[in-house]
Length: 96
Image 1 (cartoon, rainbow, N blue to C red):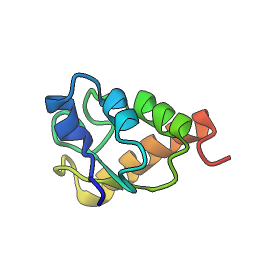
Image 2 (image 1 turned 90 degrees about the vertical axis):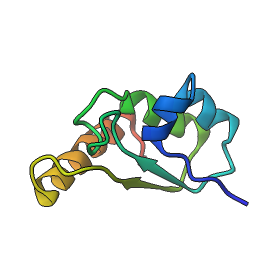
Image 3 (image 1 turned 135 degrees about the vertical axis):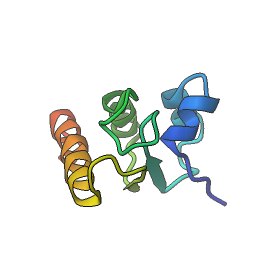
């Protein structure tokens, strides 16, 4: 049995998103990422660099699914958010 962590809900319900990801490591293969304002990652205030740093430290090799409300357009928001997350991943050497 697996769980499906979601950063939007974790930001509301957990004391620490990274601690929860660590506690349940191995129990999820997909992570839903949405910012604290329910827009796509990078349009709010969640520390996605910290989350991705934690995932890398855990050896996470599952998928990351972007979700959220559309601010400008689906295309613009998707390109922005994917670039934002890819930039963090590149800085952290996530795909090395």
